[in-house]
Length: 242
Image (spheres, rainbow, N blue to C red):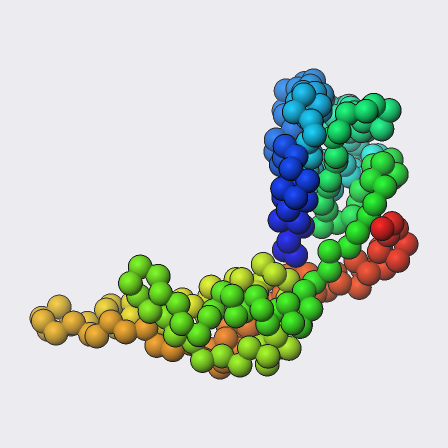
């Protein structure tokens, strides 16, 4: 949740290349021989539409270390991995303008042969205090108007940027969405408690979201990657190549 996929799309856009966004479900098939065929077709398409960028998302689910799966690795999985490595080798020996990008949340599970072919390895770290402050201000501005409904906030953005240490971009977005839903839930509760015989409906007005509301949501929404931060840093020190 640190923006790796968005960075890949930005690279393809800035370089004005055809972008292939590939996930594990795209190239993994239960039918024998289909996965390696899909990999082959993918690279052929990339060459045809060159210059192009192939982005392999969640690479660890496709290229985990061979021979480490309990119960033995399926032959189809091994063949698909081998085909992917062969195709990447083919790019290195040709003049085709095809750029391969990959992202992984578990880089220590990647096959060593794949790591060798990924010449540049960069850690996309958790956002800084200033970046977190800007994200919160983006998702919860002082005044927003959607569908004719005004939502106001009274937030100490600098304080919240400090308090969200260890939160990823997607974590912060989730906290902001939950905080924005608080005034809406209060209205739902008021409507549910409204007596059927009473013709006077409660006034529909969204309460202002405060810093206390945001901190209360944080108490119930823990960061998803904070415990792995040290492991990412250790892996970066050992394998980083920029």
